[in-house]
Image 1 (cartoon, rainbow, N blue to C red):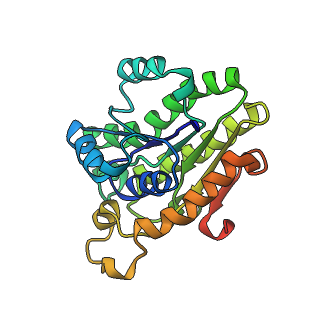
Image 2: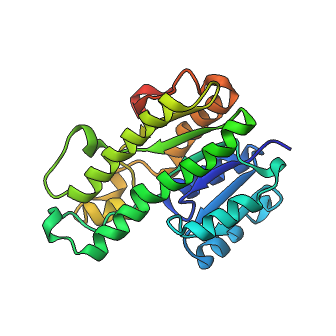
Length: 236
């Protein structure tokens, strides 16, 4: 069986759409989301693909639970790529208007979880001699905007993580990020409640392009794109 693709943040939006894309093409998927209820919903959604889909309820910032999960993965079920779609936006506010609880959750979802999993996955990727990381960035990294403080700072750190991993990973391993752009998601509604979602691309349409690109990375193009911070205009 083909090694699975690991989708972190699989419960909704682009993460769920990517799971669907890969499963429809016969690629095994490990989908990680925060709650058991979300896992049940995913299993119901992918009822016709349950032989290919493994759903797990995990808080990505929970070190002990995450390590237990990773250590229990069998060698033939260890992912060949990790896609980090997880993210959280507390609201469009200046940093000083965010509570520390809001900041803590943004840090856990947007940076600490991806950082922790990237480090632990890379330990095995290096020993296996294969594997890669596809992180998600945001337009607020290159074009900072008012009231995006916490999210913008953390996505900037994700791009820095992308580059540092890329410098240290030996060939053929790779690390890169992509800004998926605007789409109709719940996070987008939080950021722009006045926006008409029917004017935005659906996650499914974005997932089609990113999924096909991810397949090319697994197929051998990963090292060519190592260290790059891409936008949707940069991929076919």
